[in-house]
Length: 83
Image 1 (cartoon, one colour):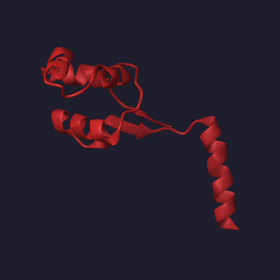
Image 2 (tube, rainbow, N blue to C red; image 1 turned 90 degrees about the vertical axis):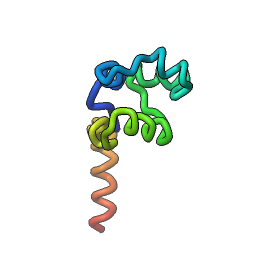
Image 3 (cartoon, one colour; image 1 turned 90 degrees about the horizontal axis):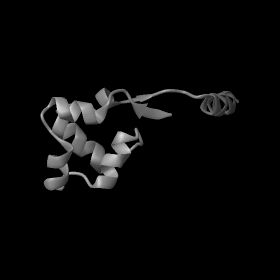
């Protein structure tokens, strides 16, 4: 599962970028802000804007963490590849 490593809204705030400014300047929609507040993944376009605003690479914001279902899927794939 891909998830955020950091609190994106807090990072924006730490850079002096408020959610009011974001909405006022139509950088993100309210829906996109809600996704960020609720740690939901966003589109590639939104991620690109975040990286621009925060002056960072996507890997600074996101990480991959395997969950149980994914571990089972990975094991199945590895068995298939080894055949």
